[in-house]
Length: 167
Image: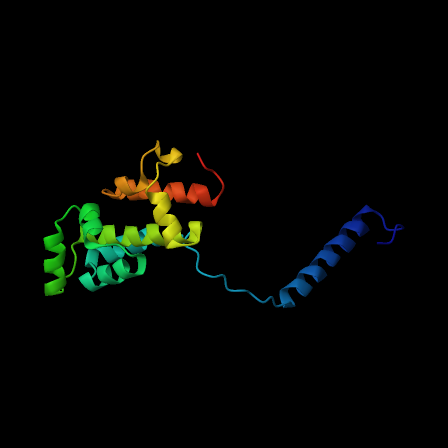
């Protein structure tokens, strides 16, 4: 900038420079890298759970989640508060789960996805689930999964671990 310019000329010079810079910026194109899906930053997952719960999921979806995360019928029975016989009957009849049962399945899926991401493997996550967690009042995470609130507490604890806040 020329030092011989007076204040009003300096202002005009700066404004014109800024306009030129903005024009240059507008014409640049930037490559946007796609981020891998991270369950730690999923913003609208709760809305997806609500939507899917209303219509329900098939028992086949529960079977898929069971296989993916190695969750047996007895564990599902404890989590959802229904008998193993009821789950087996659903499997034989290929029924659709109720809204409440669907919500449990989807929240457990969310929990295990986050746990896998935080601990690096399902086995490590499952080991953590069996030990008292300081951030959960020394409760064993797997023992508080019988309510959606309990599942949410465990998910919140995993998020704190992921972000380095252990208490």
